[in-house]
Image (tube, rainbow, N blue to C red; front, side):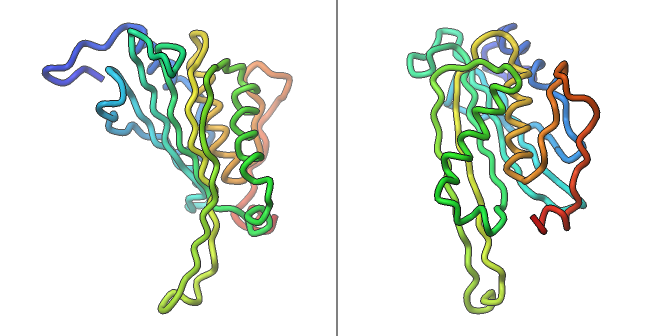
Length: 201
């Protein structure tokens, strides 16, 4: 990630943070890619996109951006900031749950806690959007998606834990069971449900 012509060389702590994010373990269902870095949000940034794919079907996805301002940012309460988006199609019974926004936010905070990812100044929104076909698409089954937009400031040097928590959030939104974090008492790999099993929940 060498800076383009005219850009300031990236600080060592920022390069180290990005490399830590790259060390996060990927489940077989996760497809992770680099994204073009956003401009004008912070002096330095890095971005990744991810999709959750089971049986060649995309069940969810999102993006995560790491922002860095060596001088600090008052609103962030630190020099780093994560900005994330997570989305997935919902099962019909979950789509009508009035507590869905609270539950969705809990998925994020629990994932961060599970991986020991400490943070301050969290903020975000949880929304659901339903699409219904009309006219030529009238026979299309109504779909409802959950979308979690969140940002927080990491505390400490272990940014890989924050990346891992976000990847877990994507899988939770997509309906996959969680895996135990590295070093936990959980052993083995939790079997992944088939596409039909996910649909039959």
